[in-house]
Length: 108
Image 1 (cartoon, one colour):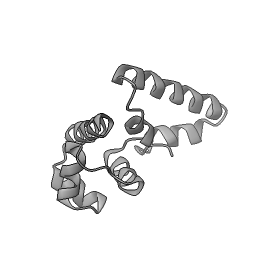
Image 2 (cartoon, one colour):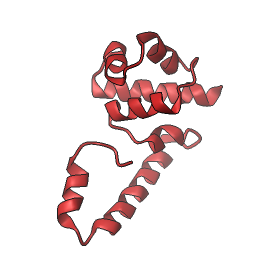
Image 3 (cartoon, helix red, strand yellow):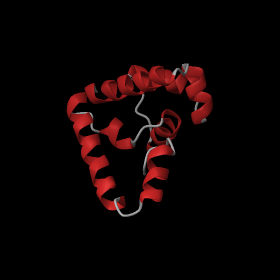
Image 4 (tube, helix red, strand yellow):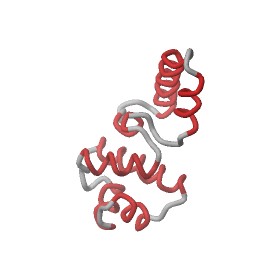
């Protein structure tokens, strides 16, 4: 149950950083306000589809939400490692790389 509460805390933090209300997140994610509230409090276990919708709206990767057993500083280090892997793949394709970096959506 502790992991679900941590997941809810991360969703809430990302929502607030994006400047959205719970109602706005619900509307943009096509779920009910009550469902968003329950997820943020850690009393509802969101489905994969709901998590994916939240990630799309909040511009997050599923990885950043799902690595719940890692402290946030370790999560940031993992995110950087993922970025380096992506950069190494696209190093010979600067146009595609700039599109990936500036499209403002998580990479699936």
